[in-house]
Image 1: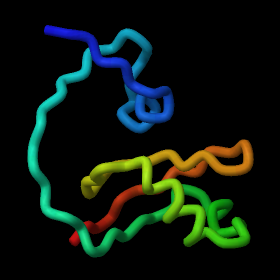
Image 2 (image 1 turned 180 degrees about the vertical axis):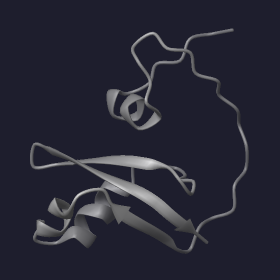
Image 3 (image 1 turned 120 degrees about the vertical axis):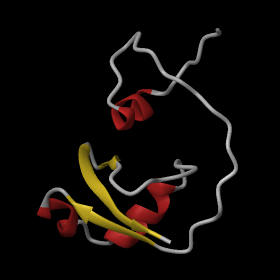
Image 4 (image 1 turned 90 degrees about the vertical axis):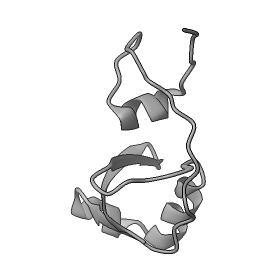
Length: 87
């Protein structure tokens, strides 16, 4: 119907190519109280304060789903984390 302009980092998280088709739906979700992540590389644990980096970067996400793989850019690197559990 219309156009949706998506930031590049979100396109990476959604595994979209430029000009790709995206279906958008508005829903209400319960607020999560717990999320468990699995880093896809041990390099993430070499960050001096990974918890602070994670908390700051996650502010850009309005929701996550089990099985999602999210990309966290930090210090000119991209760290990928898999969402393993959400409560």
